[in-house]
Length: 116
Length: 116
Length: 116
Image (cartoon, rainbow over all chains, first blue to last red; front, side):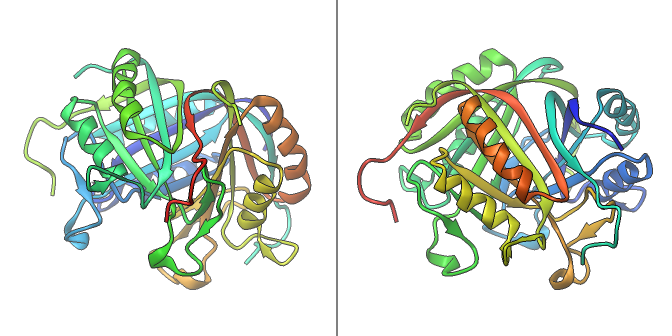
């Protein structure tokens, strides 16, 4: 897979408790990204935030019942990100989807054994 | 709230133990953002880092007493981000504030019940 | 250190279990960044993801043995980031390195006592 040079970053801001077809939405997005052969995806959980529904969430109280913010980040060729966003249109019913131009300086893909 | 199209992302790199008026600075920034009607905010805690004060922090040892890095991310219309930065000037006495241009591809706001 | 104005952000997407010279790669990158006098670095651990080796990692199961994604973020003057990337070439044998242009709005460096 060749993605060096001009590329696009995509960040999806959703809630940890958002679901899609019975699984966490962030997991569904990552699995869809892998299925479509994207270069990678990273999900980060925030410790506090608010978003499309305007409530403030925090880890400080009631951790288990809270809906903390999560961010899914992807980087790939612009046309592949654009294609992926068509899938997101169906999946993200509440949230923020943002893109920006990046430069891929290095993308090294292991051809050998899984590393762990 | 309409923010699709050209927008600005803002990232504030501070320490978890930074305070402002008796509360964690990251919480004060999130509350100010909501008060000013910004579209959303997400706070992420790092597991290691150094910043304006050049010390290396890590979760590996002395977790409770450490000052881990936190990042507050916001996205909104450029003029709203610019206005918000005037508030930050007072609040951030040590740290890094960065902006860049993004494109909002999708912003879906729930009109109904809170989701959790 | 003066970095206000046009700057470059760098994100390195690697695995938590990647190592370099006997230490976690993310820690080696942070230490190298401090050694070279960069303005700051922040390491964030993801809760799920896949990358250069295409496997899906998650905190949900087998947390201790998993190789979760980590992201190392740095911001500095473009020429300093470019110089730093030459170091990364040796260190990152598997992963994704991305840069984009940012504007540093504020960089406040404490001259006094460490804050904690």
